[in-house]
Image 1 (cartoon, helix red, strand yellow):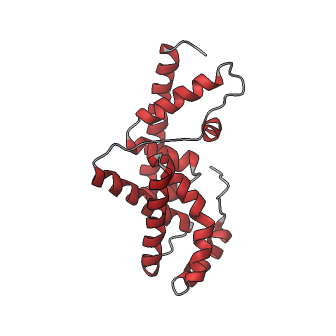
Image 2 (image 1 turned 90 degrees about the vertical axis):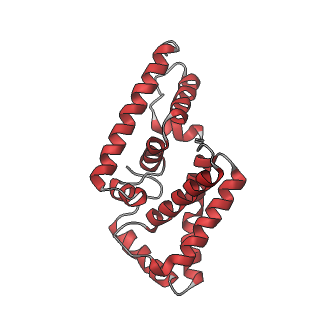
Length: 194
């Protein structure tokens, strides 16, 4: 799955040199911050649907990353996988602490990337139905779909972020897609065919 943030093996190795430099230089860490702030903010914002809260949790993510950068171990993955793991934990911690239900917000542009609406007469209704379906899914389902399809992470990265095996990441993604597809099809048919 390609994304604007996709990195090949050489890019990952080059980035790791910046990470190693960031272990002793806040200026080098600033390069990583500048590269990933927008991506991590978007990830957190979709999970909170609150710009102020997303800013706070994103800041907390980078503060934790900076504070623990010396413990970071290179595993052949982009540095962003580690940031996603921290951000996911920060969001989960926030909702546990506040004892609130997680939210899910998604820009219409991202939904259009997720489903093909080119030959559809009622695009807006289908986008709304898909968003309703996503919002009704359990957190585990949303999380894996978001990482795979909206953030463009590969299965190895997803397994790292969610702290599961790579085969577990593949299976969870497959099951999440099947579940979403079933709920979406049911909603489409119960609301009248597009």
